Image (cartoon, rainbow, N blue to C red):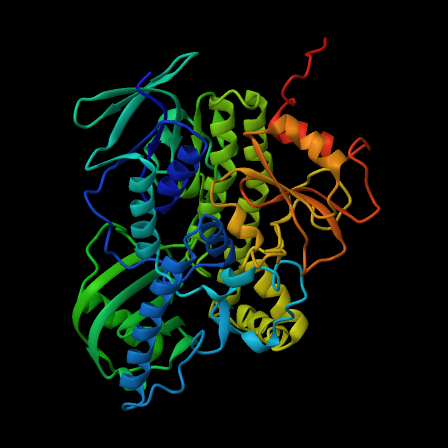
Length: 521
């Protein structure tokens, strides 16, 4: 066997998955068609789940530096716009946490006591990082971990048998691996060749995003603006524009995006007499929304846009794909390493498919609120009113940031099934500081010898830390999966290791039988 896993696609999702697999001990090859990071403009920001995932793997300093550089570009934009004054651009920029259908969500209206919105630690301050920066950082990390990344190599076909998958490439090579994962985008060759069903809704809009040189920009509104002919955005970096039109999908989605085309569309949607003199980077996209009915068929799995596609509104795609990679990586590595039964992979689809379906509906609802017809504009007014309230902004921000994600894991504790809060621990550390190695973590917060004896049967699979929790003193113990989600938690006096739904059950559910256990049946 050449590798344990071949990952088709070396974008952020494929690289993140490969890194997670390497942390779990798997031998991984990544096949990427492009020879270098695609410079075409894509997502300009990340949501909380992506920031959390990278923070938990020790990448916070790199993210912070990337955001600092993005803020420098934003200040440049504001100075150009305001004649030398940056408009007080500091911190997060304009004081917004994101948008819904171009309706900006004010940071000062977010109730941070909502689960997932106030306990993410330093990751909560990271938003302005581009998709290209994420890909670059993950490429460096993959190299450090020893992932075999083959750029300029494209998967052209594969054959699957009971024991492995033989992958063919455009170079005439054949790689044999136990598993194949398609992270090769919305037009995934892996998905098509494997025969995954991909139902969904057809597109009705044409969108363009670009960075251009232009004159007449002083007549454009900064941020998102709805007009009688569509929606447009200007900023938050010099020359960045977005147009949204509702005349149907483009006749030729692969046609070059020209300065003349962008100028015509921006004039039509904004009403401003701008002149586009040069195009630095541009892309075209629609709102087609589709999702694979299953994320695994035999030895072939899907993640990221290969498993689900939708419009780019809200920067949800990258976050959704990174979440897939975090969920699948440790599970597949555990199966490969013999630390868990193959049935563990069934939980990948059962946990991530509903999350993907929710994001598809989230983007569909934004298109409904962007349409220029009178009914949709009436709906937009109502949503805008709600977004002006604490309750409305908090709800929309929680959905945007993925704070509402909760897997249906057994257990009544409010943390169970949720992304674990970044607990402040005695000694000055935080939970994320103990998750860099990509292993599960059992926090013993009351110095419980019975709990530690139970955990001893999972040495090498689950790290155990006896400490105190200064931010949540009511907690007695927390079991955190490698993906950062809480598998089990208990408050002081509310559990015993042997009780039903207790840590013994959770440990065996996710990490197999303890060492020395005698098989029955």
